[in-house]
Image 1 (tube, rainbow, N blue to C red):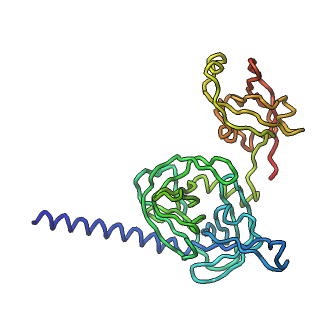
Image 2 (image 1 turned 120 degrees about the vertical axis):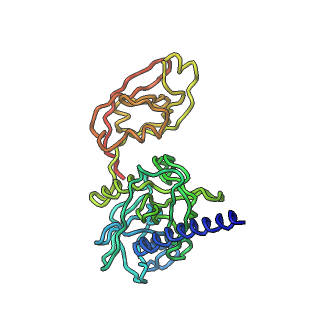
Image 3 (image 1 turned 90 degrees about the vertical axis):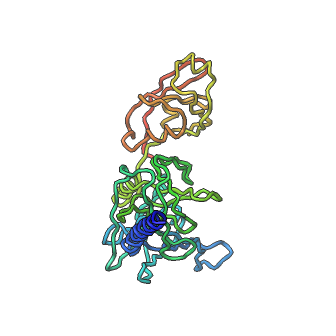
Length: 327
């Protein structure tokens, strides 16, 4: 009987510690979390002065002078952006920078007494540690959910079709409207930007890791966009026949099938043809389009690089010079 009572006391203590952690984080971070409401261009059948409501999401203040981080899909196509603060103030916002490839965007408001979040180091995350999400699901302001970091190093495909690496998986419940809100650790530091959930699965939600978000945020504030390199081809990841892999001594069993090449593009200038199979870029082996996207960074623009291509029974090395992609 003594043992049962002792175990009950320990359970209550653990529960109290957990509750204190969640309430502390909620109190610390909630003043930084905002509701982001957007309106777009009117439909052709409507009055030209009437905006079409697009929906709402979440965001959070990252600097005391009004920069706010949110998801790209929250503000995409917005003609007007309105931010609601925890104290009830409604403030107009403008788009500073947008990167659909990472599903991140920065907006800005001009208001006083703003509370900026602190960012944690997402490289130090461990599976099983507490994760607390704050956002505005279905317009319910500053809703707090808690769980754990379920997995690290996940990849997530954004609506632009690009794969985002180093994504944090959590079981802290997310719902429509949570997008763009912060995922926090037990100290209240932001460890991710909530971005997606798998429907109708339970407890499988994702956040862009804080370290990636901070890097992209800085670029968006400074340049308004992320610069990436561009080849000008349309392709898809396909399996390679085992005889082809053995004959050419390839490291991977998949490659990129070139469906089309844009006229006047770097790929066209290099001699890439529809039907080619791309298996390498510089020293990097390419298993598919996602690998190619990863190597086509801003730094690659203008640098001549060997593109390894299979054409018929030949293995060719074409010199391609990527250019900066224009959005």
